[in-house]
Image (cartoon, rainbow, N blue to C red; front, side, top):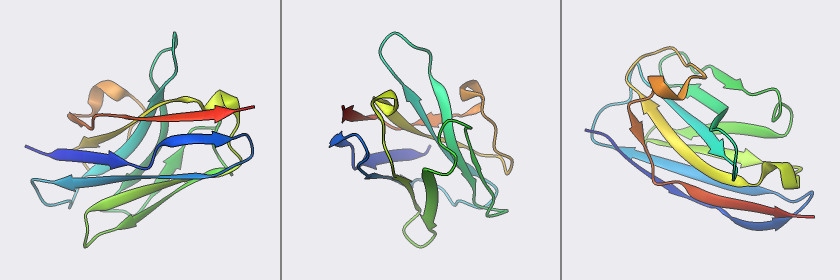
Length: 124
């Protein structure tokens, strides 16, 4: 079993920044991926970004490239999502996800564990 605990959501004005964190526990992180997805009201869940612990590779959705970045703290089993230049279109519940494989995917159904989600609201 893997537990994921997210933190860092909140309310910010357009153009502002937020940093989300996701801490994992319950197993080692070798050959695993941690990712962020988001779901806005009335919309489907969408991939935001992912990080592979084995390859150190990151991947991003086109909608956030250049604005969002992932960093990680291996000792604390934590990934951070730095979100800059936020727009109202970024408003959503952001959820951390985990898959016990080395390759990242953008398909939410391939992730086995999920955090509780954290609300991000960007006002115009």
